[in-house]
Length: 219
Ligand code: URA
Ligand code: SF4
Image 1 (cartoon, protein in one colour):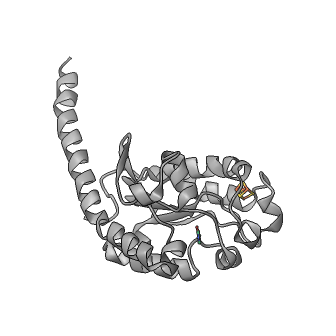
Image 2 (cartoon, helix red, strand yellow):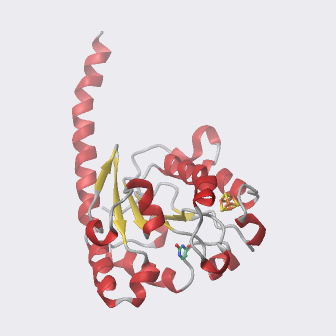
């Protein structure tokens, strides 16, 4: 159930081109906002190119900037434990951030930085085409849920075309606040159910489309 999708083509390797690898190369050399001046390493994101679940955080912190990998510090360890609650390993999912370079002192990313970086995130979403996107924290949530409050909508799946978006608290915030910790743990425990529902709806879509295809071949 939680295995990477096998029935779809290698979406990230269109015409032999490794789309995710190309995006990562562009990110590592990107000069498009001020954050390029202070980064040690850009953090394009990593994981399964055919993941059914994609997680989007805020931006790299100290350890991520040092290693060039997302969620490797304390919040990363907590995220690994949360994924395990959903029966998922890091290798099953794809993890990235709204901005790919560390904001100095872990300050909030600025609107123009988020805008400059958005095309990389768009490209990653298009290449992976996940069934479920989990937003971690308010900056990735804002892309799909402008003006909403996380305390009200966390854990609730919202349809966006062929996929669903599930807003969740940021692991770094939840780690230090026991009330949020319980909430994010429960939200991750509910992910397998959401994935199963997505699988069912994709299957019924396929069953609906199949007769149409057979019919169109007749004419
Ligand atoms: N927090 C984030 O939002 N992203 C990371 O990669 C690490 C910590
Ligand atoms: Fe480029 Fe994004 Fe890094 Fe800014 S944060 S320099 S837009 S990769």
